Image (cartoon, rainbow, N blue to C red; front, side, top):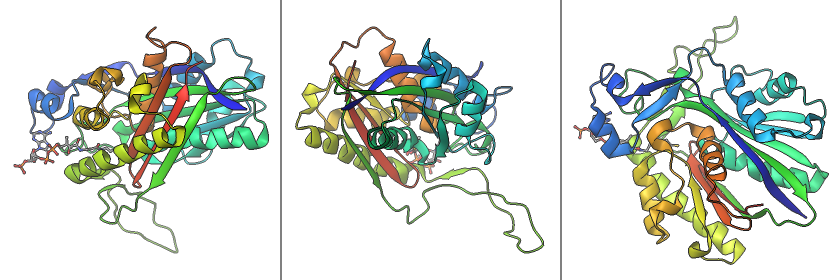
Length: 321
Ligand SMILES: CC(C)(COP(=O)(O)OP(=O)(O)OC[C@H]1O[C@@H](n2cnc3c(N)ncnc32)[C@H](O)[C@@H]1OP(=O)(O)O)[C@@H](O)C(=O)NCCC(=O)NCCS
């Protein structure tokens, strides 16, 4: 029995913000951002909620599928509209997915990989025939727009994959997830809870706080370990993979992954130039672009690979339908 990726979709907010605009907010310049990250523009939500984006991506991924056939909704996010109900529960309610179990996963930028890893296992154990795995972020609301080390990197958006249980197709070949303790708090987002009669946590910084060069070094190592691991489990070589869909955090991280695997960088799906880093939504948005590009043939092997806060990393190797 296999779990196949049967549909993909994505959604972006309307507003596009160029690097040039950011150089009016902080001491930076567009060429520095392009050279150090590969990012030129990003989409920023104004009126769109995370739910709007998640629902739009899910609708595109589902196409004409019967809503009643969706039995599981997993939403990976670090910037939900609210804590309760979960984004999963909100998507279920909004789309009228009456037969779905729905909840959220927080594995930061690795969230979509963790979501697929969870969904595959649950589908096989419980005989769940069809699931949605969504990555959605409105990172702009937890971005410190006065910090030039982070505000140049992030954007908003959503991506979705429909997973199906199959008797005859291979689908997911191998998977890998791993946590590494963030002992120095190199990537954190704190929570500002209100004061109560019983506790007062004091002021907290609710923005993304990151030591960029430390995260960069972690990413290069972790992405390599994840890629090696899924190849080894599958008993295949990097050359046997037709397309790689990496987390879109920095073009230099993507290039270093390509170098490490001795693969041409054009086998890597890249959309960071126009989206920036959209955390859990980065991989499913790039996957949707790849699947709709017309380049992918049935049986092609595709690798999803990501890393993020936690610290966390993972990869999924699958065969295209
Ligand atoms: C953030 C990042 C782009 C910074 O690039 P970098 O080459 O590592 O740059 P450094 O942090 O070493 O800083 C180098 C210099 O550039 C400066 N700098 C930082 N941001 C800048 C900006 N937006 N514009 C201009 N200069 C900037 C720094 O202040 C530093 O100056 P100094 O040498 O005078 O102190 C890079 O570290 C990165 O992408 N890290 C990974 C982040 C990531 O993936 N996060 C998400 C994980 S899922």
